[in-house]
View 1 (cartoon, rainbow, N blue to C red):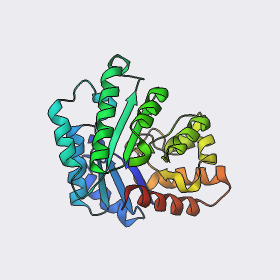
View 2: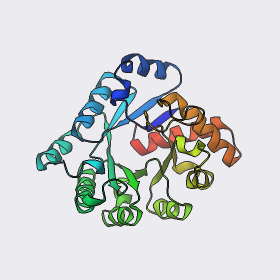
View 3: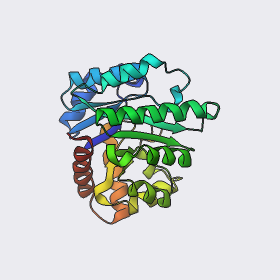
View 4: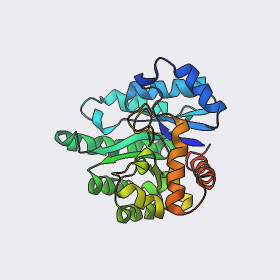
Length: 253
């Protein structure tokens, strides 16, 4: 199993991080991509990647931090992209659920980080919430098909998924696909081409059923894989194998 998007630098793991990560690896988690959200968490992601050979880092500024990023932070981010264990710029994007008052700052920060991804020749990991049209516009304007892109924790419609796929991007799904109230994720899980699908946890958040509401970890990917397999009429092992191959291709690992 490969966890395409996680946050093991989160404080939720402070008490057992250094025992949990080796345990996960020993029990079937081949690779973890730990994603940054601001400057400090990007640094922490790199530190984890340096400590564990099966951990890689994505570095970037989540839209929630649009009002806090300084000019010097972009310079630091570009430096981070040169690290040998950094495999993507992310998570970046737009989130209008909480940050509507910072829309313009979000869009500027997103566009600038797309430029950094181009300069670094790295793919991007995209966070998008209630900002679909603007996000797709920036991805198109910045030619995401040249860098490569992953829509993490995808929650838009199958029709929007087709637009995303037409730009050469990948779709990542996690615990939400198992939720009883999930509407679009199961539809997309059933339809996304097998060679464009990745699995993620977004841990410590969004644990799948039967652990919904608990702290998530990469072993729980199997529950998402089982649900996706059920929706597609295939085996969970086929989903796990295909998504691992896709993750290696996307991240270049």
